[in-house]
Image 1 (spheres, rainbow, N blue to C red):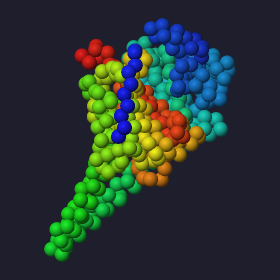
Image 2: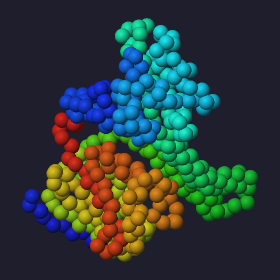
Image 3: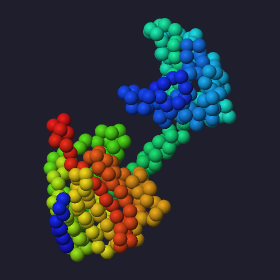
Image 4: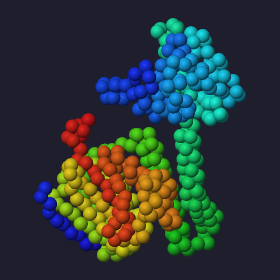
Length: 370
């Protein structure tokens, strides 16, 4: 390993347009990603936002002031008219709305619709009917993503579990027939495959926490340069040549408050990718950033990442080559870095290979006492 160090000196309802919104933030109906349709106590549309226009292909000009059932003609999957079926203004006085369900727009386009009834008192007359519309394509994309995740997990689990089952069954049935060396080899294989399963389960838990916003970050002072050095030494200890790595540190580095285990997870993934998928020297630059923080850049001299794939690198199941892996590592890396309030980018290294750079900010003291 070569190390170089250098010093550095230093919601309105009257229209479909956006209103002033809460707390003067300028947030209005048109800032919503879901369609929003609001009808008054007479059943006339008083709000029809931009997303509703996009999803229904009905212009707000034609919808505003029109009866709700005409501006938003919905049918259930059996062809029944939804507004006549639910009767928001004349139905049960205790009803507060309609749960989300699949409905059809004219032409057969399927949408997800939720309705809420605003009353002056619990059993009073309906003053507003607030309708939320979502395109089902977003849900289908989520369902496809979940299905792909399940298929990937099943595929990745099958191989190690088959190996574990095969070797343990063989040892139990024919223990006396094997030498101690053969038994050790089989048990080492079982241990390695069990570790693969453990890593996969850990990845799945990380994805669940990232997607739900529950990824915990336990901050403490982290010496980024020392952490990088430890990972390089681990690669060298495993048999990779020391001259394969070049570590360059620019001083002075600020004291970064981060989760050391998760920083190790990020470094492990980026260095392993550079070694496995890249060629030549793996260069790691550790530098202070402005505003105060620290960055780590990992570059290799391999074939790099095709330009058309750059925007997909941090998505689930992206694989840079056919050399195995779940394709979840970089997705998790991005989630960890962003949970720290940092950022990560990918580009082309000067030598033509891939270059990953992540930045971690210095946490404010007030955060540490939260």
